[in-house]
Length: 135
Image 1: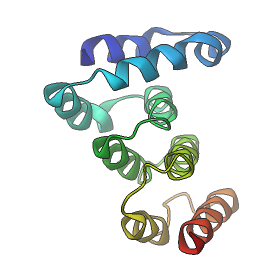
Image 2: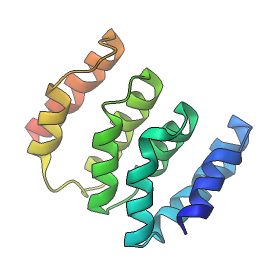
Image 3: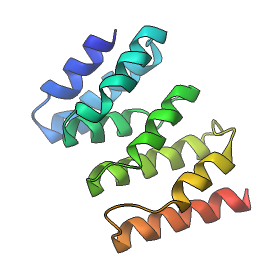
């Protein structure tokens, strides 16, 4: 199943198609991943392109699987701001859906800071930490 997910994230060239159709297919694929597929995803994640990792982060925002959160926390450490933004947005979606069981783990990861150190990332992280702390 990972191979289908990988191919989907890699092969869609049009951002319009990705946002209209591709992301829904990817979300469906995520829900069908078995342990072996999750292991492949985690082991190849850092070798993938910026676009692939951003799409991966986007597709994990509806997942209630603890492994999805692990991947999103890994993506918080990406060098590319766009990947980190997608990861933060998806973590927030997981939280709002009620799937986030260990808020402290996420707060620690967000408090560690980001390599890019952009104002946007700092604001997004601070806002999410506030929401998690108040919940």
